[in-house]
Length: 603
Image 1 (cartoon, rainbow, N blue to C red):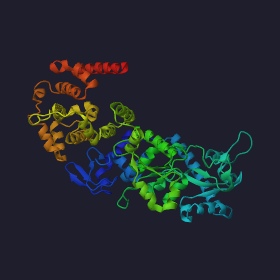
Image 2: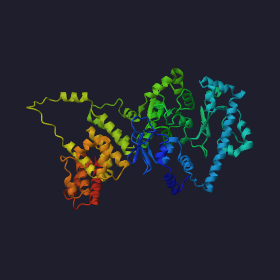
Image 3: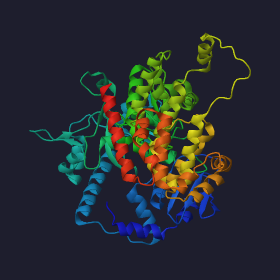
Image 4: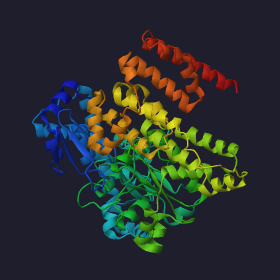
């Protein structure tokens, strides 16, 4: 449902963001902002900020960010429309009425949902009737108790071609039953029940309303070669298989933030319906499963609605590893600050249900606690067993990793992956020591001279440029983020500068320095702005044009390759910044990049 922009603006202006957040979080005023412990992840030091005059919140710990509508969506696990309707009710603001087409669509959806609910009740009644005894015995034999079976509304499709049809068609009509995926209509002949002699698992939407079913064979049918083990409802106006996770509504309650939530209660992704139900019964109340298909992009977004780092729990054999890698590569472009995946590998031949029965909840809890981050899984997939003892082999690994990392859309996450893999690709200290030992000894006369550090000075110049000209940050952010910084203090300062510019673009130099000082960077900022790093000539000459040209020149000297070509191409601008325009600089930059690309293709 689309809302008029004016309505949403009015809604945002009527609701105080800090007042709304303060119902859940103890906030303290800090100047024009409010700070508190983040409600979306566990922390001891406040990193969650609310800015009323700009109507946004941001957590520096997990990256959560949004406006008043986004906060309600995250805090209450609602979709956009649900959050808007809830806020409008609180603000006393009438929600715009839908169009005639929207009303008809809503009426049709309501009718389908009522039909599916009637089918769920029909299947439940059959399971608990005398005819359902074999199905109940099967479920009890799988370790489920009666309360869990009722909580998940399991049922039984009778072994009849027209059992459900005869029961529901008089009230709901065969056309509606067919549209809901409950009847199959052949090209010739009368329609018959889509599910027969199967244990039924109702599939719910975010609100828990039944939108489809999964049916599992049992008894003698389970051994038939032509009988699929699981059968899902066909897609319908209310059911899209690639957008739904089984157990999502129940997992939402288990993952709800708050003081009562235990640490680490992230969503757990398993393979099947029985696994989900067994985990919930054992106390793992955040388990969900795809519907017999690999996780898609929409399902990954649904997972992140439950928590920032879902755990994928796949079999430990080769097939499970391949499935995990498929999800990993699908998730790479979607990663954003604070939101990723973790991977827990089961022992070969085990599934979560069998592991619980063999080792109890403690065995599964131990397995989940050892889940590995996505970055480690990608590293292992590319590096495990690969030799790194020559420059050529190391370069191959680096090239492969870089190819994967470049698919990450968020520049901050991409930068952190690149930095992590650069560190890991460096030779180990023992290997460096062995190489030094193999080199001929050099006899030194007198004390060794202090190591030259022109690169350090050049890096300091880049920081000084940004501290004096903050408007340059947005233009060079990608180059700045990708720059190799071996100095830990400069690396931390870089992250803080990029974070501040993301949240507060357009700051003056004095305001940027003030923000950095309040965050513990006063000493290094003062050192960078000391006379030893003299940029006064830039300010005395042409200001920003000179700063841009100087940036290109220094970055070229530091990084080499195509940026050194760029530095050479723009050197005339540096020599005479008083007459060079920014358009001249961009033209020189574009020519240099085209030349570099041409050189790459000719190699």
